[in-house]
Image (tube, rainbow, N blue to C red; front, side, top):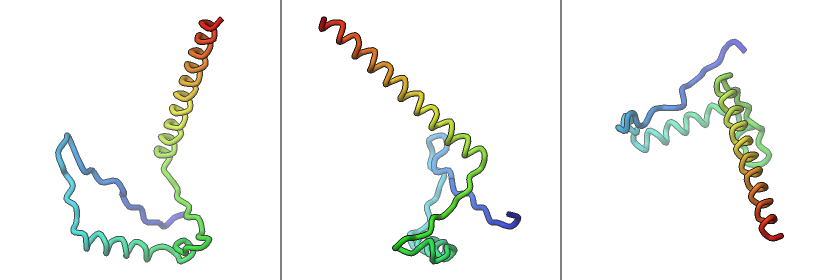
Length: 95
């Protein structure tokens, strides 16, 4: 792919605990939303059986997602191991 548009989606709202974002008027937000919807092909917007919209992410975003999933899996494994160890000690007290 050689020609595409990219738009920064995240805007800072607070910095150092101070509000730095000025929200646009509601009518401006509505108009922007309507304009953005016009960019989609009808296949993506239909209510019945819409096409899936493919989104590419940067390598940095993909790595962040992968790392967050891995950290979550490891945390769940630690918790499961802790619960199993706690369950074993309860059984020892019952004997």
